Length: 540
Image 1: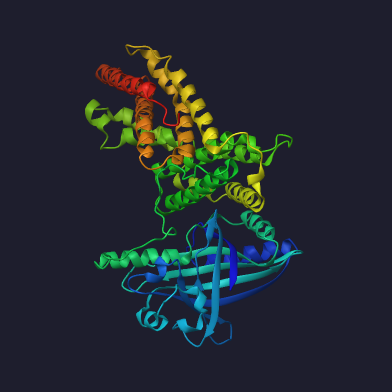
Image 2: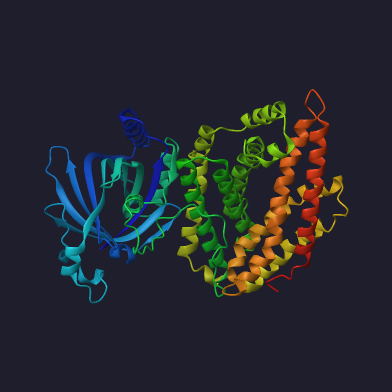
């Protein structure tokens, strides 16, 4: 058995063989310029993945694969592999695997060690039940690179995923860096070199995970999905921001580590989702997850030594702030999109004139387009941020951080920060006066950043409660979430009002509608505010 340690990255696009050859040339040139010794090879790989029709292996966290490999002017060599449960942190994959040479593409389960299987597993029966689910076929360029303290294999794969009965064939266009021997840091050194030349993003999903997703689609279409139990954290759909799952008995250090790991994972899945189907709502989710990461560094600031200038965590926090600012425009763009949509209730209710719509659409065009956003998400700087976050996690996980002397338990630590954020937003909202007036709208908009910070703090620590206590978190958060939604609507109306004054002719009906709409919204916000300010903190 060996433990595979590798970093996986997806490339931005692959349109033709010219692009593939360009990537190959860029990697060769980069290694040559850095005076790194390497051996380059090209192989054709055909991988076949097997399981029972009920996916019993998948449920045991076992992946069964056979691989046919053919190098230039050589015969095909076959190998069967079993990969068992491992870990994925920010694109770094670590999974135990067992490899056995075989004669053809059909697996022979009896050749694997018995220890792989659950007790009392009938290997002969299992052999009869397994069927091929899907395959991956690709060309692999490899560079075995020798550094002073390690050997690393860079693999560039270009091909497709194939599932019988499914016309869709997702493209494979990715780079993997696998540690062959030596220090793991060598992976980071080479990866940062690749960032400088290639448009990459960390890969959370393996080729196998993508194949299983295709297989699930195919059997769903054919109506054969029922009675198949699936327990697979690799097939993750884009997830809305939820509570970070922390244990009450965790140390403060381990709570920080787990929260950062969770946030990075969700960030990378959200980037993948945006790349597959770009939308402003998905980009807003990316912005939200960047803010969740930054909030973690603020909340756990005391874990980091203050005698380093600048400290690693300060640099990471600064970079997170940079990218939050870089895509901060997404909220305004989202509001304008909602206002100019033909389905918009604002358009229907106010009969917004075409000239105003045109002005809003022109404002929308000033924001970065999808290609520019994709360039940001595949940029060297954004990749270095994620790799540095991973590096920080690995260093913290490799040391006994639980010995850090903290003056409070995690529960006390969380209560302190929840109380602080709750009091800050409550003080701000307490400034509001009734009945509604112009300053009410301004104060609500001013309170927005404090409200977001309070909700992010709840995202970090709300998961500490369990069972029936979880309902208390939901009840406490509901009026604050209502206020957040109301402020978003206020921002939409504010955009309309800003554009209204620039119209060549006055629009008294629209102006009156905006005033009435704002007044009604302020009344609703005041009701939510009154309820929020009387809620008993669930952590006290």
